[in-house]
Amino acid sequence: MTSRRRIVTGHDHDGRSTVAGDSVVEPRTSPGLPGVEMRYLWGADEPQSYPDGGTEPAWRRHFPPLGGFRFVSFTLPPAGTGEPVSEQASAHAREAFPGLLETYREDEPGMHRSDTTDLAIVLSGEVVLGLDDGSEHVLRAGDTVVQNGTAHSWTNRNTEPAEMLFVLVGARREG
Image (spheres, rainbow, N blue to C red):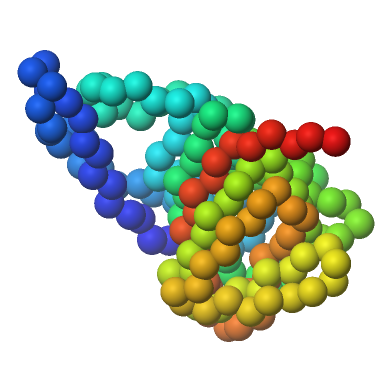
């Protein structure tokens, strides 16, 4: 597991820029998603107002609501990592990553859709973006994706973990 350093800026009582926090963000893991590491680096459930003191806003679920956002680092293990998921492990994953598993389709493992615009970059490794039209797109370090609320999956067909960085922005689904 790899932790990530996070520096957060804020404003002092005179409105000047200051470092409000310098900490390490440890990954969340779960036996319900073997090998997955999720680092919730920052998030909010509503638009922010400034100046502020630099404290992290409250947020509750993996995917942000309309007006909210998440900044997340995601490590995807090689396909076939771990054992089949038990009900207890699945329940743990639902607690560790609230709202994530509820977006998954039962008929297509890994395929999910959320009411978000996801801005992603592959930091290391190689991943396959699968879409529900059956197409697959290989992405390597440095490649980016703008995922506009479509059904999709992520697969790592290599032997080493892949890491991606996401900004998820709450969106509205109509129809």
